[in-house]
Image 1: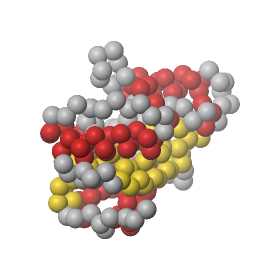
Image 2 (image 1 turned 30 degrees about the vertical axis):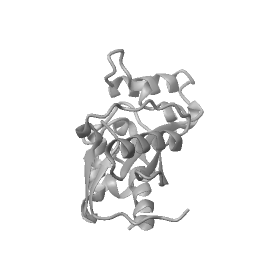
Image 3 (image 1 turned 135 degrees about the vertical axis):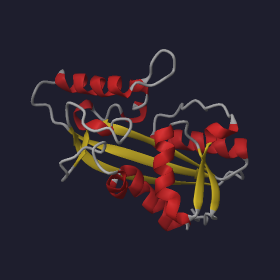
Length: 204
């Protein structure tokens, strides 16, 4: 597939997750791109009906591009725990879902820990964060970029600088969790940063 060049200016970020928007702004700040959350356009959040990161990222990016008439970027990412067969995976956010539609990440981290504990004290704690970025244009063109970072799960959670499962994810070779790290350090190594490096190399 031919890669299109991204022009400096506004790009719609197809997420209602404020933490994710802030992280993407940091990753794109030096490129002349101004990420704008899809929440500012009063669009309905599309239902994520696919069972892959790529499929769900494309659903979100295409819906935002069609709804705004602008180039749109969607991120579908998750935590894959080796001992849990890759769960929570594509359903990472679902593990945090409350009956009223809000998300409780402390509860989600506890669910993962409980699932590991049920396997016994010697259960391996290896895992990876996976990120899939989808770019979509209003004319239907799209591009996909992926990144991942390996780590181990720690317990109890540590740090307050990240979001999602960051407080229990300790990347290989580091003593701090993602939530304990300075954001710039995390951005240099994260799954999202790796996916963005590939996007930037192809699109700018």
